[in-house]
Length: 308
Image: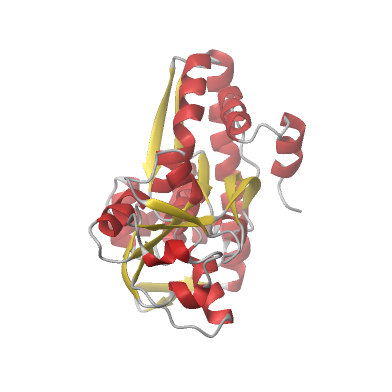
């Protein structure tokens, strides 16, 4: 039994049993992956994968239990490597942070600036994507930390911490008719074409839920991941924007008028996630506490203990 066999099993499950994709991830050949899987199955005396001819189609019942053990073994191997790096050079390394555009653009600059002042020899790899991909990257070890508003609390193998709460704001051109409504209602808002976030981004679910609960069908004419893009199209007169409050608090509103939307849409919670059971280097703790000052190291360690 060796680590290459274990990695072949883990990546096969992660890649949907596509051995070509597994071979690309592991920088090897498809026959090599097949051989690693077959040799481990022969050594253990059980089939880990279900097959249809030569094609892998899923995990067997024993395979699901074995995969869980393999995940733990590889995680501990990664932890061992990180621990050795910590002792060899406590202030040198790379911190990979996966997050959404909104967090990277509006909430992280001050945190990154303070972190770099404390750890000038640590390189930060800032990766931007959707909450779903952020979770996948943290689970796979491609990112050390994930930050997003949606989705991170839904994964059993992620530990996520609530960091701060925020609301949506409404942005309109100066002189817009909505500015005469005090307060603005969903009914009044729905009379105009709307521009807001893509599904799954930046609290979009709370926007949809509010209109659904009021039995109102809004006319959402354009969506984007980027708050700046949304505000740009609002400034062109294409519709009324619904954006994260920090997008106007931290960066202005592109000359647009801002209307409070806290009474219309449910409060959002931005969360920071790490992989359960992961070994965190000292600078990782520091970054987490820069972003969420109320968290203590004891709080983080307690939450990180492996389930079961």
